[in-house]
Picture 1 (cartoon, one colour):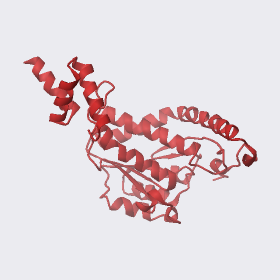
Picture 2 (cartoon, rainbow, N blue to C red):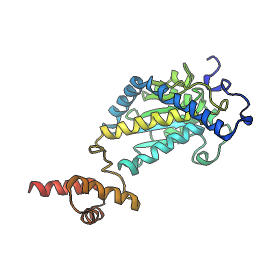
Picture 3 (tube, rainbow, N blue to C red):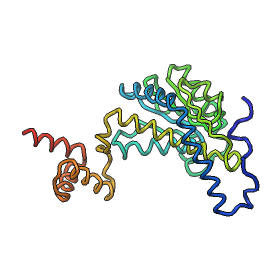
Length: 273
């Protein structure tokens, strides 16, 4: 592969001489390009999402594997699926090079181990019922490329999200997504535009999957976990909006059942009776 676009020199020079205002205006100018870069890949993102959905509706799981920022973004997305959509822990799994310690602190050279990605997947009893999505801004991370390669050899469907074209990671992805975001504001700092692009695409994939799997009613998170006062209030207001009952009554019903969906089903049944 030629020089990685994500490693090319920033279009901005002498950042240390810029004011705070100019620094942030220029970063914002670069960030605006990210959504358009994602838009160019919408057909590919749709195809990838549909392929994952076919696996998950038949009981398969979705795995994200990555290192550094990419790995952390995968863990973030996976960890938010149970509280947001009420799915079981382990339906969407984030795996990062270097293990859980790497979530908070970089683990030196962990991403350079081409065998470890597959070994980490094996710890979760990966099978051909599952789908593995590799996350690598550079597209060259051995941990990710090696994991995807082994998956393909075992008949496990794969995809990737990268920010460079024709990368090694994409070679081992059945559904490669290459979001070309260009050089970073700070040269090589892929936690910036490349990371933003990956976050946007992960949001699109997981949210669309959960909607398709019936975890959203209308535009409401009816299966969210009621883990704090804000979410209890949100759930109560959903019920008030849907049925026109008093807030206190809605809240009491919600606390009794512990589920917005269950309250909806109970009220619908009462209406039919």
